[in-house]
Amino acid sequence: MDASKIIVLITGANSGVGYATTQVIVSNSSKYHVIMACRNVSAGQEALDEIKGSSSMPAKGSLSLLQLDVSDEASIAAAAKSVENDFGHLDVLINNAGIGSLVPGAHSKESLHYVFDTNVFGPILMIQAFESLLEKSTYSKGPYILQVSSGLGSFSMASDTKDPFYKTTFGSYRMTKATLNMATLQSHIQLADKGFKVFAFCPGLVVSNLRGKTEEARSGWGMAGDPKLPGQGILNIIEGNRDDLVGKFVHKDGVYDW
Image (cartoon, rainbow, N blue to C red; front, side, top):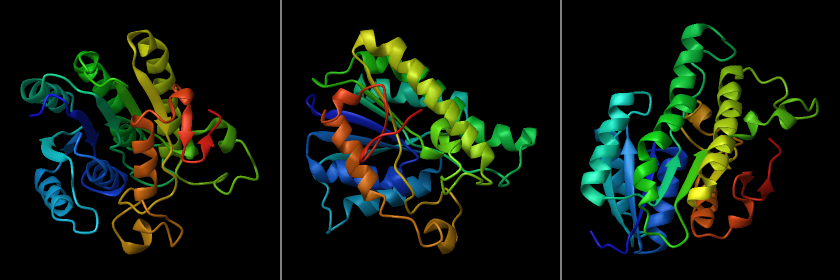
């Protein structure tokens, strides 16, 4: 591996925002190597092959596949060891993997555990596991940590009776993103002195499997946009173009209130 490569790890990289972000980054420059961290190896390999074979967005950078289930602490530890052995450091960590509520509107213990394990505990444990590798970053602008959040986790927006999602039934999901936002802010405060640049990032409503795998759910009932747009927004951050907003809850057009 070329020592000058910027090593980027993206969780949940085989679909949705993770897939689109991977494609945007590797098609941008040969300076990037993206580690596609996926729970399902076969799905990850299929996504990797698609990106490598794309004629519309040819890959300039390089790719590798890493098995990783962010809801499994042993899997996270094994993944960190694998990255250490293969690369010796990490420059950018994008905690993108996420799931929707098991049952929309349900707040059972099972439902809460299901969503919190992936959307909250996973990113927290990922930062802990990869912090030492990020400290060894060779990237002149980094290291970066991006937590893919959602405007649904904003207290300001959630309490606005005029917000279109004011009475949304995805309460468990909203709670996880609000908690993730606090975890992100705490990570920023704790890691800033080490030179880390930590962001919460809202991709907006885009086509993904988050809401389900039917065409209706994937398209957000016809309202979802192209996930490459937030992919470009994430690239913009790791290129250093939004460093004035470090520690904030950003989206492509600005900043959300927590």
